[in-house]
Length: 308
Image 1 (cartoon, rainbow, N blue to C red):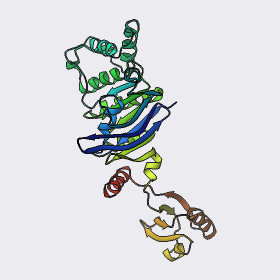
Image 2: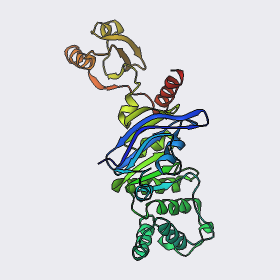
Image 3: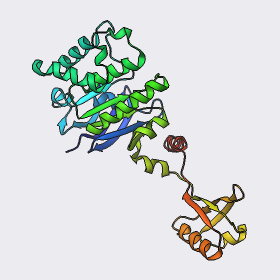
Image 4: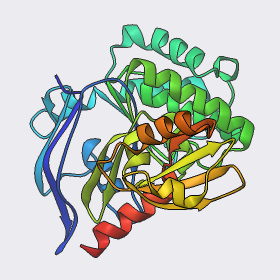
């Protein structure tokens, strides 16, 4: 059974389509990054998944439950951490978490234990009786995360969860998100590419209201990679000798021993370089496929879809 299944999802504001025919299926736990430039349709998609916005067309299922047909039951499976934290700062941490548990329609008999468990998980037990307005930004973020998982949902949606944190707070909140990702599915929206790279196993990218990429982080890195190899040779040959190898289209000497070698698709160039190096004594030390930088891939994908 899918944890999240989106079928032909579309929504428009007045005459403008914010998203169009989005299809997604997530079947396992872990952290999945949701990427997209401003106005791409990320927030609209997240609001629909959370049940805060009714779509114009399409269907959303949470753990096999149709969100439109059984909204209350489906929302029991969803946790949400919006970019602007939904905190009542004049409440203590305990008061706020009890209130959130009641909003989630949890049974009164289990609320106290759930609050204690989530406080321990988020490392905020020592602030139980402190007013939220007296907490630092990092601990407020932890309280926000705590409310999103107090009812043990299958799907947790986080919108820019580390925004505005200092470096120490950032590290701790990342660790917490990683722990949550071991037990449930986290859909994490962020504009920080390094954040996505560190935390996520898969990426979904939305541009101009459509899904333009959905695959692993490695596939995203390699999606628009150049056809080039980075090669380190202790005893490099002349350029003409390298160009004799079938499939090589160009050679660039980056330093005395480090080269960038361009090649045609479908050619076993790496194997040929290794064989020639052994035969001719080039003393090959390193050979690797050159990968695109994460930010560059994002930019190129964005440009491609906007031009189509």
